Image (cartoon, rainbow, N blue to C red; front, side, top):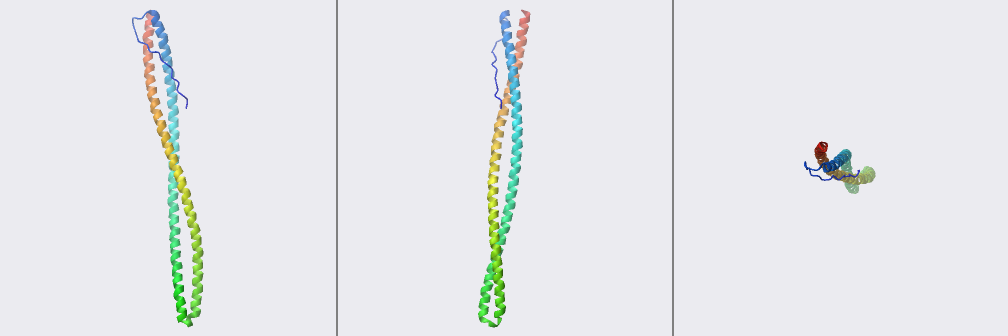
Length: 212
């Protein structure tokens, strides 16, 4: 932002009984003060416009980051839902595999007791083993998928952390520029009043000069 240049205003006291030459000298100084006050007024007005534009840009950036944070949060929820589904599937497959193993053990005992059912039981065993192998294959697949979802969650968490930090940074900048805006508004008001005051003094000295 452009630096503010302040112009010094010479302090004068009004004396209606001053000599003609002193009145003219005072008038010249007052003219200079009026010009300086108006210059300062314009400078603060330009600075105030810059501050207002900066605040508008900050608000726009803050809105963008807040929307990004909302999108990331939504993705995290979806990711967790998918992870839960995989974990439920994993649990069900483990239950099914356990059940098959229990049946395999039972049928092995039946095989010893019922030799006439050996053929059927062997067929059952083949099928059970095939089921177990299939469940194991599915279980390996779900393990990889679960890892992928967990990795995805880590990425989303990192992105969420960056977004939150960006929102905090924008909020700090917004506070800084808001404080500057208040300061420039105060200075603008002060210099506007000073310009009006100097113009009144100028008018008085002008009148004295004309009388003399």
